[in-house]
Length: 614
Image (tube, rainbow, N blue to C red; front, side, top):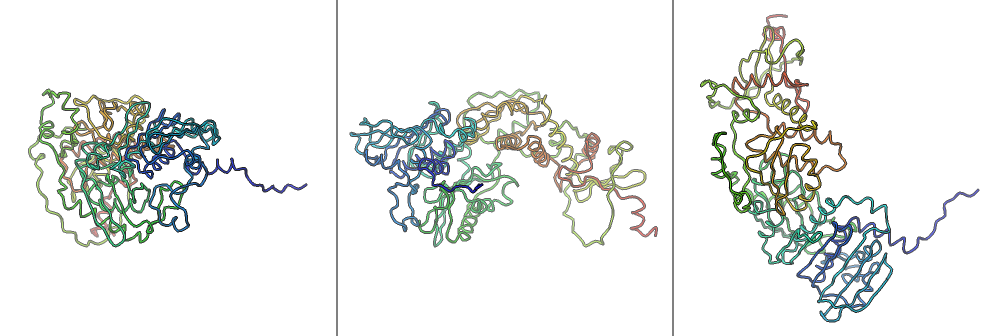
């Protein structure tokens, strides 16, 4: 019996459906292709309206050159375009679209109507269902084009079922439109969902105003311009100071000849500029605009046109890093703290502070609260009360030690049996190099890494708070106001219940702002902003990851941030509090990253080092 598979030619409809899947992945793909066509058509105004985050309906209206009825009919066919005509054109592309696939692909998986006019008088419309012409005729239409796409993926149910919920799909659309707006500041672009305005730009080429609309007013005030060029490339844009940063790379935007792209190597070139400037694991907000001759880049890499190959990419990377380094080092990197912030934290707990509503809502006057804390304040956050002994409270300047080459000492680590001996039973001798605590009992000597010890206690406390379904929280005297991108706001709105389960009460407040009214008890009372940002970004970035793994990672990150740092003087009373906290830990002998907290040197080993025994 012949079981050989039969090779056959696919039908044109099936071929077109396969091709459509390469170009159209989700509603944001439709928006991208339609808006890019509008830009290529010379539009100065583009209106994007979506219903149910584009899952139900997408309408894009522009005031570009428009199309005649014959051009419309030709435009929906596969591989028809006005942007290239020869093989050489493919390697010298100066438009956003060029493949001639967009409208044909959209047409295959939706109900689509195209209405267009070249003169504002004689318009014409075509209605399609899965690429089949249903109806056509004359229509009143201003100069330009209006395309409506409904019931996306109605004929490909598997792809429809794989769409995310409306919040996530709206986030993708909003993020896309924000990037397109930054790439085209001279075009007025508006986006609405279910009739609610999400973004509206003026098209006046006012970059600062545009950045304020997208990232928020505070971010716009902390953006630094930069500009440079070499023999191949010209770069310019804006990047953030050390006053604002993010927990992921989503706010790094790269634009090449008006096209937004993804390129991890260029992102690394940007982040390399911030080494030692912003905390590890944080990323700047950057809008990088690259201009070059079209023949220096290859955009024909992928149907999405988001990936580009560059000529002499290494020199481009060096130019980017060097330029941004100069830009951010030419300004003051001192963190700005307002006088009222300092006054707020100097007030007693009993003193009532009255804030007017307009003080909270005025975005122009708002800056994040990041006061400088002493070690005493750090402990007070976690209900530890240092003594008032004058000798203990005096922190003296200690000269940096001169490191000398010492003979190698071999010793082994041992743990204490917590059932027989408690950390708090050890006698504190002193601090070595402001890194290690020296302790003893009746027989042996012990060294504790002060940072690792507090990090372990903090980690277990925070992790328990995460996994505890009855998370305690406290209400902030003044709601914390934080700014995020519109696309991120949509993701936050999708997970409000999850945040509430953590003890974090969040209220949307404007298009780029959130109000934090309650926070978990483990969040410091004087400066919760950094913690809240980290929690929010970790939650909204979570996709298929196991929650326990995500909570563990976040607890480690937050614990490290709030622990005693190296080279920090520590009071006797603080040592005793730390030892008691270690007694309460489930695993007090290593930090969350696996480094030892405690090292024991026995009296016998000590005697061997001093040649008292053989």
